[in-house]
Image 1 (cartoon, rainbow, N blue to C red):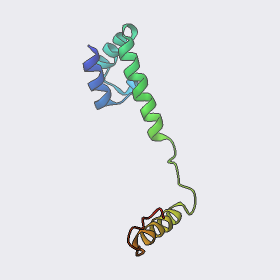
Image 2 (cartoon, helix red, strand yellow):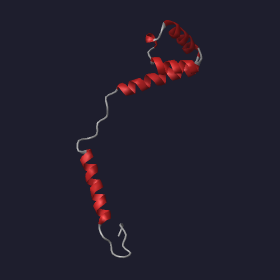
Image 3 (tube, one colour):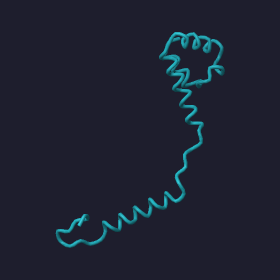
Length: 90
């Protein structure tokens, strides 16, 4: 097994080698013992799985309402008529 095949197997079978078919698991373990690139791939896959399993981040209460209000204010500020030569910054 080479690193490319190992990466493909991680993508297909997941990062938990105990769930892999015996012949693939044994080959993967042998590769891991000698390849820092394979170990890095496995570490990355495990970190990704852990991140995906973490609770989702929630926005603070009222954030959406504040964004909508700010957008509406910006829209109304830009819609006000201006005299000749006046800019939004004036």
